[in-house]
Length: 616
Image (tube, rainbow, N blue to C red; front, side, top):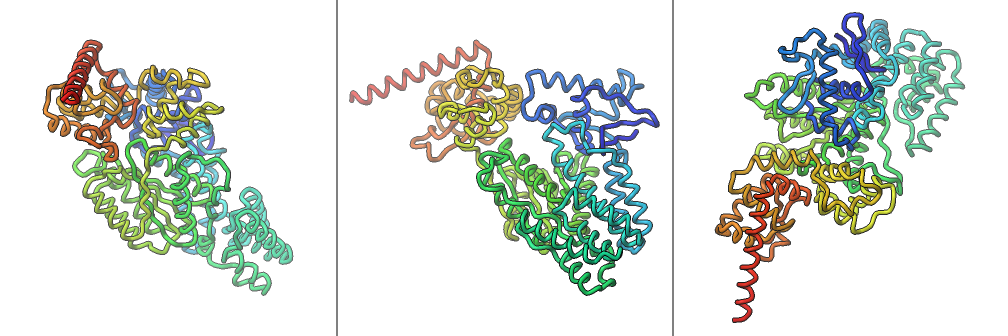
């Protein structure tokens, strides 16, 4: 079997092209192929396949598409036999296949081999290898999912790698004295990507050896003006050296070792112009800090950043945005996702650790080889000691390198990860905590969704429901979008989104029975329940109730605010209003009536006692 991503999606078995069905099914297969064998949850699949706005029947649709894909990929499998290619995992679905079955993987290997041959002075063999890799391309990569956000980063990375391969090919043509072909290849590259300096260098050198030095100098002035106008930059060292060599008729310098071509700097991610709409409302400052990290790395100053926050606060999304910026500028953007399965002692440990270790070792060995590199390491709190050790080795060995590393981590990662983060911070890493979105940011998001003016009350209500958590925010918006341009009137009555219901069920399952009862009584009382009232309603000591409430805080159902705690038990509240609605939805009607009756009695007793106290 062969999976072909470098153009329209094709799956081949021997010489047969398999029928994959409608566009959504093809996009689903691409989404799984991009994970390199890792599992993807059903909710994440729904979110990615519908760009954050899955319809009510999305889960059923995904299951149906999975079933059809299994039939296509394993047509001879009996009903009683477990799927071997498209597997069901405890957390979702995963594709199991050797990496070399992907044409994108073979292409990357071909480019690396070509560069190694070029470094060894074997230009002819290197040229054959890079042309073999480029011949795998049939069009735009991942084109079947071009309207889906999840392909943006990988599509940009692959196209950036193709450009690097074409630049290498042009340099090799020049090295092999195929001057006319080198000029043609370089001309095409500067027309497509005029801000990449490497093809301009090849073009100037090829023009000189073609007997056209005056045109080579004219081209230098052209690219110098272009860089100044669009980026505010002067030409890099390779371009300046090439200009001087042409002026001096220094033919020796104009035919340097190929490895020097690898040092031509790629583009610097530009700053977002003032007044333009941010990609991520409410995250402007954090994105500015990460963009500054990239600009420093482009000059050879390695930089590290740690993005931390609660689940759903947007750590992965902000990392994806920075990766897009770097990829658009022509950077290499390897991505590493740590996973629970990679912990020592689990059945996936060896495979997971070997994959991540190989990626980090290649990073240490090859950083800067093809221009600046941004490495995104997701969920560092799930990494093993081996992986954390390799990351620290990168920080120690590469202080001066065109490298930026962005790690994402949970806001309460545990002692081992805390020690790792402390050492990174000691080496100058920028620690960027992500707080929940403000009401103003929620209003900005809502205005994008409704494409119209948003009232203050609507933004406030949505902020209360979501707690400013982007995941909850988008789930609520997706769930009520069918209500028209002003859905806020029905938010208090809206049913809980399925994904939120699943999250709450999982968190409730982590609590002992007594703590769960405290959460249920709190949900009946209100968004910010007084725990003294919860204690009276449950006929429990206040100290015991507070201890159980703290357990609910630890699983992120309740939140604690010191500022809102003038008296014992009054600093607790649901982390988001929709979580409270979800807890209420888990109660049977009889249980809900009984808890409300207890709460009403407790309030009456409290009012009576307060009145008696005032009478005395």
